[in-house]
Every structure is written in C-alpha cells, then in structure tokens.
Length: 270
Image (cartoon, rainbow, N blue to C red; front, side, top):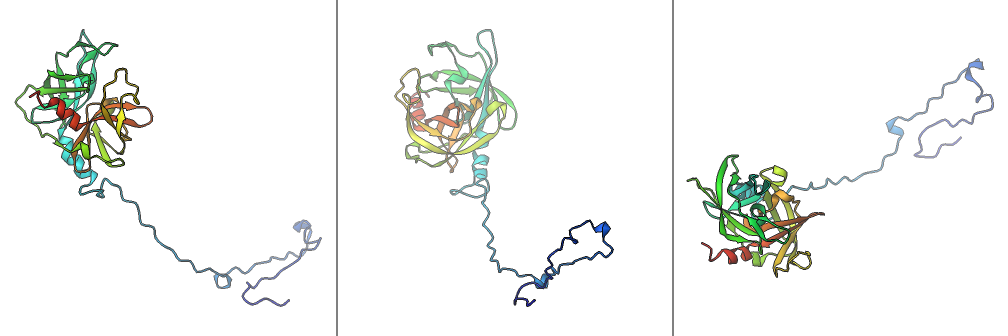
C-alpha cells in the first residue's frame, strides 16, 4: 500500500472473523502497536493572545480616587444609630453620618416612633451611636430638625468628643449612570459599603406609591441596601455626600433624598 505524503505511518489491518474470536482460543496472539509518536503528528500553528484581566474598582480608580480611597475618607464619619427599646417603643436601628464635629444626620423614621397614619407618637429618650472605631457614644435628638416629610432628623452627641464630618457634593449635578457608594450598617454589620450606579435622578413619590404625596424628587440607585442602611450617606467617587439613603425596595432598588434638598430644609435650623 502506498502511503500518502504527510500522513502518519500506520499499519491498517482489516480484522477477519477469526481475529474477532476469543483471543484465549488463538495459539498466536498478535499485538498491534500504532505509531503515535510526536514526530508523526501534525500540529496547527496557534496564536495565543493573553486577555487583559479586569481590575476591581476597589483598587483601580474610576475617577481621581479608588473606592478604597473613598472608604478611607468617608468611613470614619459614618455611625450606626441605635434607639434602645422602652415602654413606649421597640428597639430600632439604622445609620447616620457626621455633618459637623458633633451632629449626625439620619432618617426621621429611624429615631421617631409614628403611627399608621404617619403621625409622630413619641421621641426617643436616648439614642446611642456606634462609631467607626467601635466605641459607643450617647446622643440626643434635636426635635426641631425632625421632618417626616423629608425623612430627616439630626442628632447631637452629649460628650465632649468630636468627630470627622463628611464633605457635601453638588447633588444638582448628579448624572444618570454615575457611580455611587452607599455606606451604613445593614443587619448590624457596621462599616459596610456597596458600589452601584444612579438609575434615576428624578423618581417621584407617586411612582414610589408613597402614602402621602411629598412632591420630592429622589435619586434611585442599584447599590445593595438593607434596612440598616437607612440614614446612611450615598457618596460620589470624590467622597462627597450627594444624598441621604431613605428607602430600600426588593430587587436592589435604593431611594435617597438629594443632599441639596436636605441642606435646604436644615438651612434655618442651626
């Protein structure tokens, strides 16, 4: 048999009926070894291009700063807000952040007890803040700053300690699709942050089906939020607070009050 050029050198054997019989009955057993040595194999030339690995935004800057930079800047200003249980109310908890060296901004619904109609039933006698370093400090609610309409309340620590406040951003310039970071204490897990994007810059109370029309435009983001995040800051990648986290819906929908709305309400309170 003439072998074609370039094909492997192999012996092609067509088995007879006897070859298919039980080998134990054969006197002569032949072992056929196929030559499969590398020099007789053909290989295609492959061009391998190494993919560029994706770099986590926690170490790679999306803007001027990395997410780690923002966490280092904002983290020390964020607290867990705890209202102890009493005869008047159950224990509640959320988040907050220092807007100056002694005062903390949070959500009204975190610290104020309300009825089904949304009317205030009572103010807490005591509020406890767990700071970034794990210490607990007492605070009091400044009742004149409470707004159920905007879901805003301000606390003031009663000790002589001072803390690092946040920096405010320009929430009027927030863009759809912009990166944001949510800080807070979801499920009592302090020092938690979540990265996401702005999905809507003008979500209305009607769209959110709130019980009372508030005529407020909210930011919507897709950061992973939990009840414990309420009252925490939503910041841009410069580390500036652009909103107060107020609501979270199933499906990864977070709702926050733009910080310019908050500042407008608080302008005459201090």
